[in-house]
Image 1 (spheres, rainbow, N blue to C red):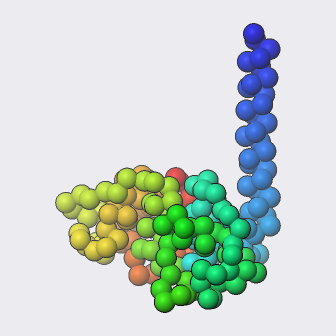
Image 2 (cartoon, rainbow, N blue to C red; image 1 turned 45 degrees about the vertical axis):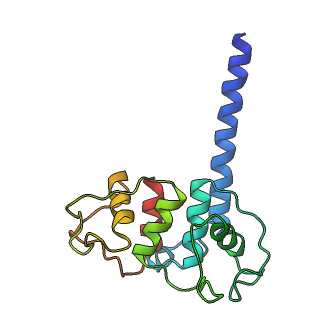
Length: 178
């Protein structure tokens, strides 16, 4: 009986190591966040494609092969086609007028919604806002507050800056604190 436990523990440990190696490999290959991993990369704005891809991978959602038929601006060879279509099918993101704009900058308010929904975090609706620039009742209020309640965001200046682009390093920090 102890041998079975030992093997089960060893098996679980090997699976954990394999999962970490796969994540590091995919990060190194750029499938989590594409690009050169120097300082310039991390301080750049994250794109809509990068955010849904990273959020889907981090949350462990299945990413199915892309058909290329969902959005006219997301061809089959787009690096995030699979994640964009999978995220749309699961209701995490949506396009407008047949377009997704995968290479456009993702705003922090939109990224908050994607992270909260992909990670099935509780929405939060406190009567007093945490951030000076996120008013009670705006469409993203409960998503931003949900991230805050989870300990994912930090208010260094008292502001969230919902209309600013999310930087890759901020996206990574949020995902690391899920």
